[in-house]
Amino acid sequence: MLDAARDQFWMTGYAGTSMDAIAAATGLGKGSLYGAFGGKRKLFHRVYDDHCNATIDSANRHLSGDDEQAFERLTAYLLGHATACAERRQHGCLVAKATAELTEHDEVVAARSLITFENVQLALTGNLEACQRNGDINPAADAQQLAGLLLAVHRGIEALGKAGTDESTLRSITETALAALPRPPR
Amino acid sequence: MLDAARDQFWMTGYAGTSMDAIAAATGLGKGSLYGAFGGKRKLFHRVYDDHCNATIDSANRHLSGDDEQAFERLTAYLLGHATACAERRQHGCLVAKATAELTEHDEVVAARSLITFENVQLALTGNLEACQRNGDINPAADAQQLAGLLLAVHRGIEALGKAGTDESTLRSITETALAALPRPPR
DNA sequence: TACGTTATGGACGATGCAGTCAAGAACTTC
DNA sequence: GAAGTTCTTGACTGCATCGTCCATAACGTA
Image 1 (cartoon, rainbow over the protein chains, first blue to last red):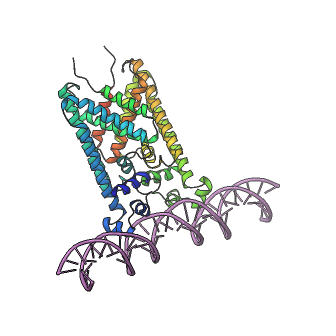
Image 2: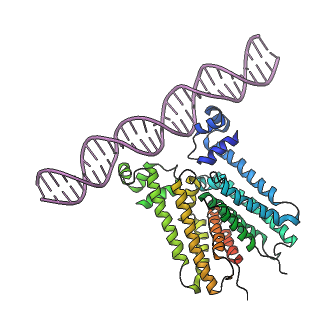
């Protein structure tokens, strides 16, 4: 039910989505929506919270595991994102969209977006540390800084994909980023 | 005059900006706005076009010049962007915002965004080739691919800055990206 | 079944919006 | 300065939207 509301916001943004549209999409009456959530803004906050948690969970699920395959997981995570961005660019990422539209006028959204990015970076840091233990990344490098770089690339690919950059270019950027990570000295 | 309209769209997005607000901001009557531009959508396209051109010009101006200082210019361009993003007063913000909000429902905006990104990447490629001639970057590397990576980082920093990531973190990401560029063999 | 409580939903009011238009201002030309 | 032309303007229209309200349905309890 919240999924239908999320998809509406996802497609047409916050200001561009009417409560009537959400009522139609969810099959609920407007009175029920207002009774259950208190208003458009609060409904969005609820939807956004759930979505951010799902995003963080997804990053943790994809990036954590045994050290041996950490680099493969990292590669799969980033390449999968590049492909997903190119394929469903009609939607893109709700976090990116909401952050761009609402962050400067809505403290709740701004805070939630920041926390989400920080948690994705944490998942990346944990993965990179596993890569270092496994000998795929130079252990002298600062894993947190590298994770920051990969997070920026991740968000950048999102932005480029939304503009219509084709999949092969997005994948090439991802591979270039992975190739630029510092290798351990031989 | 168009600057005032641009600032309105920049602040509150396309759907969130009323023509009355633009009339108030520009000091023009609504009739004049409609007479001069034909409607809200067309006015936005005009504003967006000018802004995209300014963004491309800015990239070219900052990144082109003699080979000797190419790497310094690249560093200054990216670090300047990181700082500007943290202060949330950057021109590129409108491109990110408009792309996120309108790209899937407005092919004019989508096309213009893509062209803008491609031109910024071109400016980056030219700069990196100068860096290669000057011995700051490995000449065996593919300058265009590296430029794609830097463009993604550039857009990613934009997105992170919007969420409220602090300036030192954004600058650190930029420095990590620059440090990851392949150096020439000694 | 009878009764109290809660959930539902669509009609409704108030407001805000994009876009129009006719009256008048400003400017040009002779 | 008069006549003609273009620009400017803000009140106005019709429609979309947010949020409310109340009649009604569903549910729980005894």
